Image 1 (tube, rainbow, N blue to C red):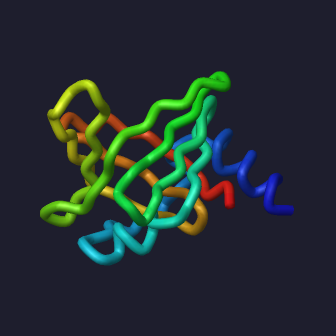
Image 2 (image 1 turned 120 degrees about the vertical axis):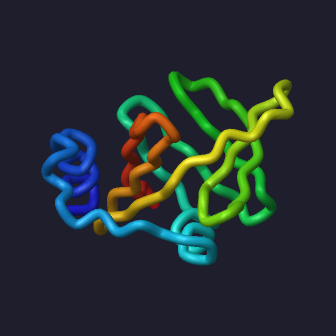
Length: 110
């Protein structure tokens, strides 16, 4: 059942999620810390230490994450720049919303 829900969340159009709830501060941390999200072709593990592991096509990429000003922020070496996104949730689906309304949707895989 869990896999079916994950497949449905990843395959359903964005419009199917009508109940997105904007997360803030501690809610963002609670939604991500110690959790794994599955995207269309990748997974991302959010460690309590502030490290994050993004895996796609069998390749790992380690970065950093934090919550700042009610946004999820990430940094991927060798760059020292941080990029921040709004975070919204609808059930098991999580949506990252960038400054230019670029959207990435994941679903809990754990």
